[in-house]
Amino acid sequence: MTITNRLASTSEGTLAMDRRTGWLLAREQTTTLTGEMERSQCGPQPRSETVQLSLEITTTVERVE
Image 1 (cartoon, helix red, strand yellow):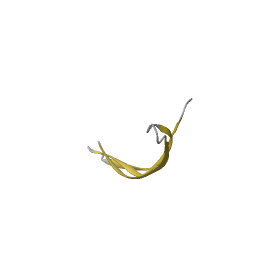
Image 2 (tube, helix red, strand yellow):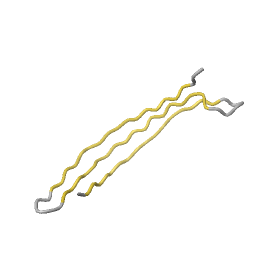
Image 3 (cartoon, rainbow, N blue to C red):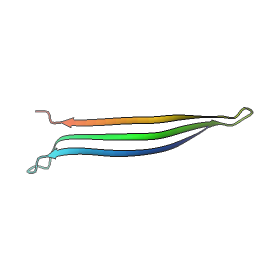
Image 4 (cartoon, rainbow, N blue to C red):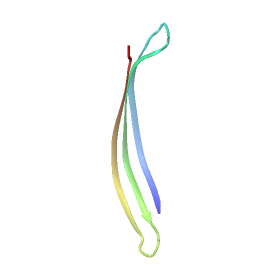
C-alpha cells in the first residue's frame, strides 16, 4: 500500500507578551490545512482512492492567575 499526501497550509496568529519579563500572556493561532490524500494498493486487483482534506486548527493560550 502506498499513501501520497498533497497538502498546503497557512498559519496566522497574535500574541501578547509582558515587555518587562518577556513572559507570554496570551496567544491565539489558526492553522488551515487543505489538500488530498491518495491511497494505492498493488497486487492482483490494484485500486486507488483519493480523499479531500480540509482542517482548521485553532490554539488559544490564556494567562491563568
